[in-house]
Length: 335
Ligand SMILES: Cc1cc2nc3c(=O)[nH]c(=O)nc-3n(C[C@H](O)[C@H](O)[C@H](O)COP(=O)(O)OP(=O)(O)OC[C@H]3O[C@@H](n4cnc5c(N)ncnc54)[C@H](O)[C@@H]3O)c2cc1C
Image (tube, rainbow, N blue to C red; front, side, top):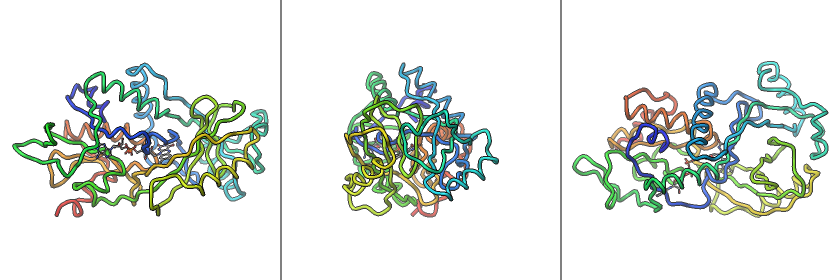
């Protein structure tokens, strides 16, 4: 969002509590055209992905950092049903789905029985690198306020929004799961879920790619790999659980041929929504308050597109994609 405003030279600041663990900071950063047990094409993929590619490349140039790459996703079928679903979809999407060949020699690294489906091209965003690089740019440009704000203190007076000493014509909320406590947007149909990640260090390097059976193994830094994840819709706290760590350890011992060591284990809350579409647009009752949120699982492809769309809406009153427009929840938001 901030990058879209920067490109238009719009004066803005970003207020962020600076938490070290957030949903974005622990996400694997995958953009995948074909997802789920039924290997369905991701919603609006053809629209979202070109904008994502363009935006991440612009940001790489602006930040002078490499954090975006093309990658192959290897799906090691966990059961016969999964293998047959892939086979059926392969003829529908031959440009995206294929089978791994023996000379890829993945049996040197993994135990698997039912073959391997390949999904390509996928893309990987190194989110910690992007987010820390962008935070540094904001600091240098004097646009970052590191502080947890109390949204109940945000008041409208004399045509502007005020928070302590800060005044603005507009406020754009991108506060992830914290929105469920927002006095303005908490009534939206969020459906938060908790996701856990275990970071493992391998004793030997892997070939390039993201690998999945029941778990997903994705490159992180050097020999450190990201392993996840789960989706817990009922949770009492935001801490990682012993149960998930044990599950990962047992499953990896069966799956991986390369010895590994568990180095870290973290959890975060995904700002998911009931109908799985993000929330984008202006509060129908509080003019000047906007939201860009609800990207529970596919933020890497959705955030660039809907940030651009929201900026165009603010600047030119252009339309917002029907499914994500917060006006759909007008009845809930207006009281
Ligand atoms: C384990 C896991 C794996 C994932 N894998 C992928 C993946 O491979 N691909 C993909 O596309 N998506 C993935 N996701 C989902 C996705 O990355 C996130 O849901 C998404 O990035 C959410 O971004 P966000 O900015 O809305 O929320 P967050 O990342 O939670 O950020 C919200 C920000 O708002 C700040 N904030 C909140 N309240 C306040 C306040 N009062 N004052 C100041 N600051 C505040 C927080 O500090 C935080 O920085 C994954 C998520 C998880 C948990």
